[in-house]
Length: 198
Image 1 (cartoon, rainbow, N blue to C red):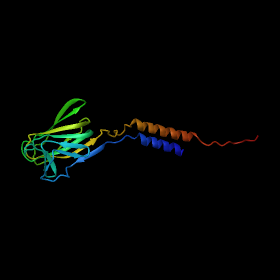
Image 2 (image 1 turned 60 degrees about the vertical axis):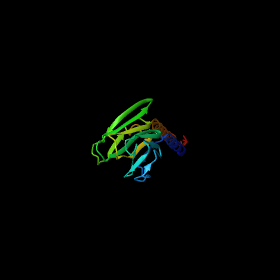
Image 3 (image 1 turned 90 degrees about the vertical axis):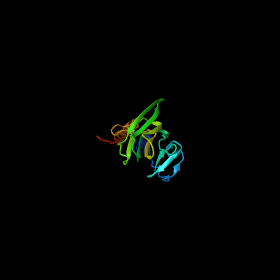
Image 4 (image 1 turned 180 degrees about the vertical axis):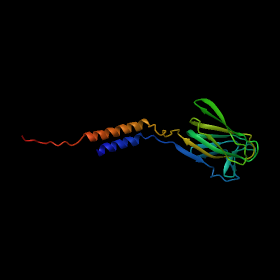
């Protein structure tokens, strides 16, 4: 019985799918006031843009061209990424939103994430509806000095755990094997031979 149950547990562990890995980049390794290189590498993503990055308070970054934060930012992920989120802050007037573009299955797609228009509040951009992508291009609408890009979140591999109530095929197999083992153990009993004398 113990051997059967150990085998069932082992099969269940082998059949468990690998889960995705969540990442967060907050630029805490950079020093405010510095000019960072045009390429920044972090676990899971390489960020590039303009001639470099101005490091603003927070710290946060903005891609600059000739001292103005009007350059675009490219995010190159190590493997297909999903659940992409980030924040922006603009301390001047005219900032309207973030345009983004990406390739998926050989076709170009794009979109726009507007902001609330208040230059003193952080705007959160949620791109979790995008398909798994390896490159995301961002440009700032109404750019100029002071656009801050910060708190990048993303999930790599796109291997999301299944939704509750919808078991994976491997889970069904484990349940069936477990029920079969229990049924077999209940059916198999040591039978005692009884002798009756007439």
